[in-house]
Image (cartoon, rainbow, N blue to C red; front, side):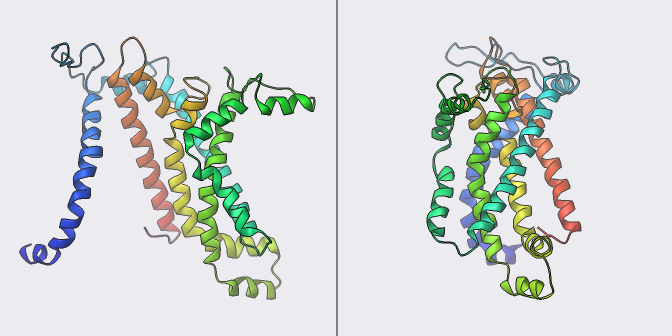
Amino acid sequence: MRRFLDRYWYAYAMVLPVVVVIAVLVLYPLAQGVFFTFTNINEGNIANPILDRPATYDVVGFKNYLNVLSGGESFGAFWDTLVRTLIWTFSCVFLHYTVGLGLAMLLNRQVRGRALYRVMLILPWAVPAFISAFAWKYMFNAQYGIINQLLRSVGLPDPVWLGQSNWALVSVIIVNVWLGVPFMMVALLGGLQSIPGDLYEAAEMDGATPWQRFRHVTLPGLRSVSSTVVLLGIIWTFNMFPVIYLIAGPNPNARILVTYAFERFFSGASRDYAIASTYGVLILSVLLVFATIYRRALRKQGEVW
């Protein structure tokens, strides 16, 4: 151990500040949140130094988990919200990947003005999310929004996009796809440019059709990039808060797990910190289980990471 530390002390000294920052900003709040899930802490029994009030919450064990998972908390809100979260996540990631791959393949060709197209397609990613959210919220306005005005001009029905219906979920999916496609496009474009052109020439000489070249050359060549961006896309989308909350607000038809946890923590007559923390731990658990299964599936396909 002494020889090991003598040899690598400089590397550990460089890593130490990052470890301290992560411990303070991530690990400590995470540990505190996990502890809150085993209590009945809320705004009424938490310690308040301003009012000189000590903490009076009690440890209740796994009661919060049983309450949430059994449907006793808000009439099964967890399972309904989980299903909506899965629909939201996989719809967005599927559209991110397919649209991003299509645009990447177009930009990988020698077309006039390709640099300009790249800049224009990256703009949605460069604009801050809250600015894009407010712009889209105005466009989705049922009375004055440009989307409904265009629909009315061609004689189509103009729905209340952000009302109490499933159109609210469709609206936020559209916005999130618009925001997320540029990242997917850039990542997949880099993967396409790393595929040797000799493979396409050999496949074409063997008589492969464009679909066969795409299936047997392009997709295998993008496997390592695709596995990474899809995993990141699922984690980011599953935890996407600003798009939904800034556009739809506390709308139950567009509510996902992270927005519902936020509502339980910051709204209501008695802010239920225990239930909100329970939702946070369950969100983390779902993502950890998914990431583990996803990693094992990739290892079986030869992708080791």
